[in-house]
Image 1 (cartoon, rainbow, N blue to C red):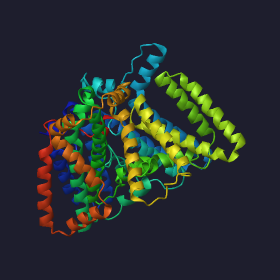
Image 2: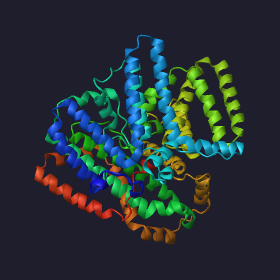
Image 3: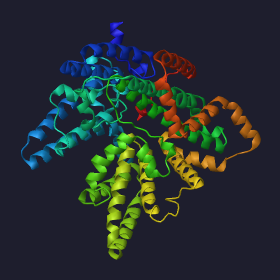
Image 4: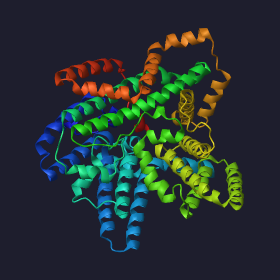
Length: 553
């Protein structure tokens, strides 16, 4: 039993997943020990660090060494920045720290991608070797480890959190933590270490030394988040993926084109249910322990334009990219060498990974056009900088999701859409319209654009998105007999999809009323209702365990 508890089996799935009984037994044990240690601050931080490292080990095995190195390195570098009396010295340490963090992220997440692109461009046959996996294989004597440990779980999240801590100290927005274990607690806090939300030190660290407090309102809110997250994950995400989306995406040619469109709408609901379901459970579990995490989603499919969507979707990543990339580049006010160098490097990078040499002519043409406009309309310069900064941010945001040409295309499309919207809203006659039909149209168009771009998100094979779109266009095949057959075949999944969208689009005041009603219930009635809901939710679970989607990127 102990050997199973303290061992890592990558083939077993996804470690201590929120949807598995093992996690809730683990969490129950954590709460029992936490109740005995929460009044002793140093003991509490050591305990949570140990639990966080153990939780991470159960998900990513020996990659816990990478996490541990990152914690130690960034803790000491942040202290060096704070103690340095020279502004030049501070900047040098900052650059060294950020560069090393980015190199670690790039090595584990993008090494294979870059090697394949290099081989394709120069017709070479280099192999990308996971030296860390080789080292752990030699140390443990497990040869299969080399092929299976490629990307440490959550490396993007804990790297971004580490960078934000260092940069905030450099900016004098925060001071370093009082001791090492406060910092390690902040990084390894197990509810958010794998998939976020990305926490900022100035928001989370002050909570560490606050007295534990949990009233009935907070308790009820936490339970609501956990139950809501399980419903989103197991019903909205897993059920419709298993019984509808996967079947269509794996063989789109076997279905009429209109089924592909419905499947993409369903995929938008699936990925929302999957990712927001995780963060709902994470925020609920955290609140039970007395800690508040960033609310990562805000009904994103109610968005009336692409800018509104990105204010509602994965809000912690959006805030990180804005604070640590977009604004340093100049934001919407200015641009400098960073903007131009980044733009040039992105063009070179796109040439490298796509071999689309026509991009050179497009780049030169766009640059010449902008220069001409600036000559005749000097005030337009600030819009050029804003647009470039925005495009750079979204392309990097696409790469953050994964090492793939399709992710770059996805990020680029969203960046271009944001740029076009920024110009359109200045002349749009509908921007301030309160007419309900206009509001509906805005939501409809925004949702369908976001869904369209996700074709490049779900279909990772080169050319697969275009093939899928061609099939949808040429084999639409909408007629009553075919429609009835599709409805009959996927009846339960389609009912869940429709109900999922209806609930999502319900007014906020209706959802708030549900939460208030649950909060006012006696504890016994709350427990009974939760037990009944969980029982029925788990009836939707298939025999095959599905990990959270973002574990795959």
